Length: 358
Ligand SMILES: C=C(O[C@@H]1CC(C(=O)O)=C[C@@H](OP(=O)(O)O)[C@H]1O)C(=O)O
Image (cartoon, rainbow, N blue to C red):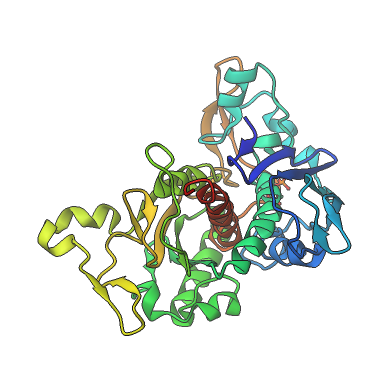
């Protein structure tokens, strides 16, 4: 359905070319200082038209806070956030009313529902992620109160990859360039690749790396709602995501247990730590107090502005080229979406952990 989370729960609604999109956040504790500016800052990082590397669709994505806040604090009641659509070009989509873009959601939505809002991809549009980002900003505010810092950055575009791990980067540089890569030299090469790809009317994919610091030990549920399974579910629900790995991930298969195990020690301050962190801060599905880190793989955007072989809804072979305004690469705008989904999972787990001990 359209709801995510157990105790910190969001329900998103709306379509890319309808009146607007929004979210109801239920379960956020009362007494959290929250303003529209907190949410707007997150939305501004995701909105379309923010640089020449993104879709040129111009949306201000101004959030309207409709409930759940009184005198600058949450009241514990549902927080409703609404964003009006203003720059829809629905005629760009008349050619797909009866045709299926390759690798988009057009065919599968038709098969599932028997009808489809084909304008801008309707509900399957990545515009839906604005609602998640708005809700994620609320979650992030709650996490900040508990000293938990969520961040993510673009670590790869096509074959251009950041040559070092997150520990060797200054994550304060994420916003220093439009790619959102904190390694400036690599960011410039990524931007160049995205521009070349756009000019060829093609698209390119890549990786976002997520990092969460300050997580206390003990967040995550046995057995099915492990912290990493919930993070994986959250990430794999983002449009265009094809893969998720945390900690050593797929590379861990190259190590023996004697190399992979993270040795415990107690530091000078009496804190339990591990010498390595192949576990990615999660053991037994529960946070162990070390950094949580993971990677999310995004495919190249499906809609490309060049003719491709496909079929129409009568099953007849046709040639179809995408029209309108699209992202040549979703990675720069995926960063705030990954931040939002990470924050939603952790906020939910933080509230759930309160039920675990007498
Ligand atoms: C509007 C956004 O991104 C859109 C995502 C999208 C798609 O097919 O997913 C198609 C384009 O929209 P449209 O052609 O309807 O203007 C993008 O601009 C957004 O992220 O806010």
